[in-house]
Image (cartoon, rainbow, N blue to C red):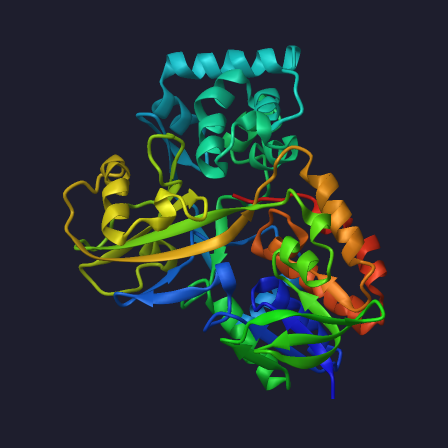
Length: 452
């Protein structure tokens, strides 16, 4: 008996499987890793539950997604207060922003420079259809030059002029000086940005709870099983190739990278030009009960290879062994470059300046662990959306195939966006909607939406 096969047990794939099982459909989820969650998973290190980066469940999630969270996490969502720090050169700004924090962190002269630059951008907007110009239009040329452009070069590995303007609209969410002031007063931006939900037992508890609920409802979740391709027959998916064998499928929900999906369907040229930014994560066990009081430190300085420092205890509310803590660093990179190839010892040396910036210089390092992801973030080069549309149009011609999630839709999003898309496509399949129907209704899920 064939089933709907879901490739990938990240948030979008598990949400789709949840909707399908609720509708009475037979579902088989295939996950190449040994555990569910993907980039939203957790693992054990030095007695701590650590995540693949500083993940949060945002208050911006819609009612059905919040209900999905509650079903997976036992009905309760623990609320945490944001407590971050942005490092800009030698300056430190508390995040979320406050007027007092901005004034203290930047100093009067720098505040005036930013303010005048932002007002000038409103009066005479900078020209250009790229990330740098969009950042300058929103917050001024000075903010773009000292904060957003250096961060973009480090995170994306490209000059700001080569990155799409839509990335600027997503990353620089305040649309002018007034919006910035409102945010600093706690009145603007994406609502409730100062608080977030965090699961007990680490962020991966969400995926683990969804997977357990699926099994209880009669669905299958197979970990350590990688999909190797698709079998097509007369323009329709007939099976998924697993370990050289065919697993019959009446439909397939696929969360694998979009270029790979095009390759599997014999259309590799459709996604030509789309690529992903890789990520190396370094975790350090420190001989200290707490590293800092912040959950995340952001480093805009290009001289520091780490993009962020995050601390497990500050997300979990202090859970973990006393007298020790674990901090993680995410280091954007390209597959095969120096960071990607570096040993834990080499990476530790690279992040020492960041440790110094956060007051952790000289703290004894008891151990290190490294994790790597080859396709962590879709790379938004200028004009990427036309290529993505071409690829998704081609895939919609394969009946029974439903791409969803960050990698397959080539979209920057948060977990609640991924879950919303998964629930939506799961319902569509249950209602008998075609692959073309899904393509016609994808647009809201392709808009870059980032809560940070």
